[in-house]
Image (cartoon, rainbow, N blue to C red; front, side, top):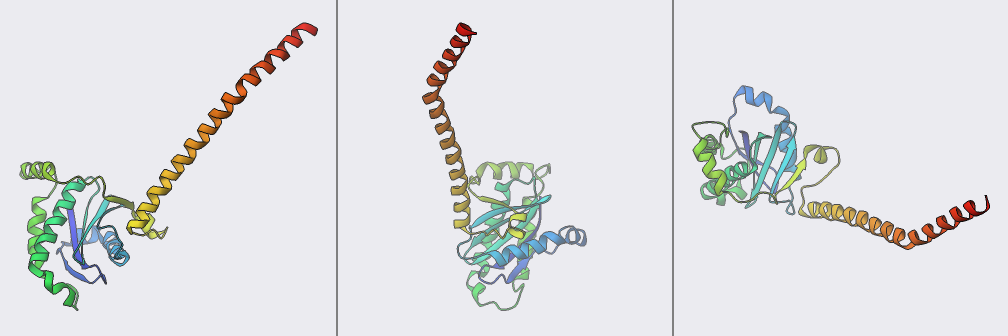
Length: 217
């Protein structure tokens, strides 16, 4: 289920709005909210517009639209399609209500009143096992766009390896993986070629050795 949501300006990570979480949720997600701040600071003009970042039992999903980052913390088992549909709904409503004002804002949480819409929308995307909302979720799950192309990263990559959220970083990683596959295939082809080239010679040599051993021993 969706646990907490924060909206920030992409250009400088200024928080614009956030869900008002209860004390229990606030305590449980304390570390992950700090990680969310790190993600906001890592956003650049070249960052992937959508990304899922796994961190322990939770996944942080973000969506960038019109210089605004919409980030939600959801349980790891929560469907990505629903998480990004939820963020897409927030983006449309936020842009409609506050879009022209975003660049001129100077103080944090200037649009705190947006919490009402976020809480209302989050209830539509609650736990997929919830019987009352099951029909809505099944319908949404069937209507949503494919998310298999959305980049997925691990929080450790961002914290300890200095990995970035840039598109070129993702492309570089993909090319590196493909290059490794190519090198493995090339090595196997070379080995097969050597076997085909020398197998007859080795067979004849072995036959001669056995013949001479049998003939003169």
